[in-house]
Length: 303
Ligand code: NAP
Image (cartoon, rainbow, N blue to C red; front, top):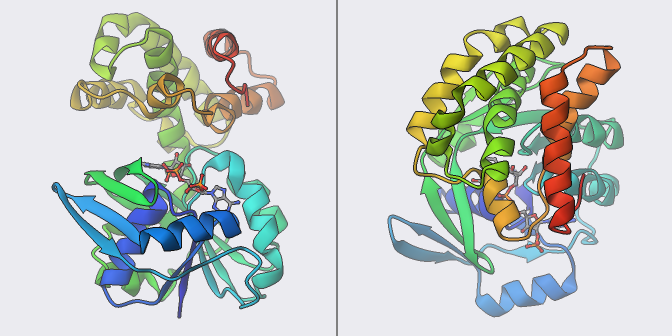
């Protein structure tokens, strides 16, 4: 069965190249005829691994292509996911599987509402990739991808394809807790790295502020019924800061390059979830205000 992949960006390209070189049928779905022409002019998608570039001539199409899509990997940013899914809805039949690679929370529910008859499988990935040119992806960091379906614990048979393509992955019985945990880690690290304009390691100098944020995030996770995701949160934040000391967070990179962030699906989602439960989390809310003011000063979207 063909893997349709919407979004030939960093993660979409990384998945597409590995599936294609394992001999599996892959088709890329690009924004429009102009992007399709640009892609064809390049002769395919390039993946750079360990400094070695290799081009994969993966076939591509636009969302308007008439063929049915039995399996889709949605590999765009969280803020593009709902519209992208809606555009493909007529091509997704009743038994289609849709894998959602988006970071944070909120976009998955929006997509699932648009694709009521598809099975939506949620993913949480620690793999790292970036684009250093159009349709050119650099594999920057080994990682792992958890997949799961909050509505059905049965793993799909196509996990064998990921095995064949050497995509490190596991099936999670509680993918929502994993996504909440990652969201909490992100909320404790990424906004401060933007506000202090620093690499992750420099946040060790703001330990008290981070401890206070972790305490509030822990209360939020518990209020959301994600008690296990709250366990030892501060310790893990400290470990991540140490392990990624030399890196700029993804949010820092987005802001530095003048790109839209996924704030609405990370800190914004956390603050909205707290507000819905009448939970006062003053430090988290102050962090959101500071970050939004920072983005506004730079002319970047606040959602
Ligand atoms: P990215 O490099 O910006 O790629 C997104 C791609 O989606 C772009 O190629 C974009 O097309 C395409 N796209 C957007 N809307 C589209 C549409 N309607 N139709 C067709 N294509 C569309 O983003 P990314 O870094 O891969 O991130 C994807 C998600 O994975 C995010 O939620 C991110 O947080 C998460 N994630 C990323 C990494 C990483 O290392 N990159 C790691 C973990 C999680 P154009 O090229 O035309 O703009």
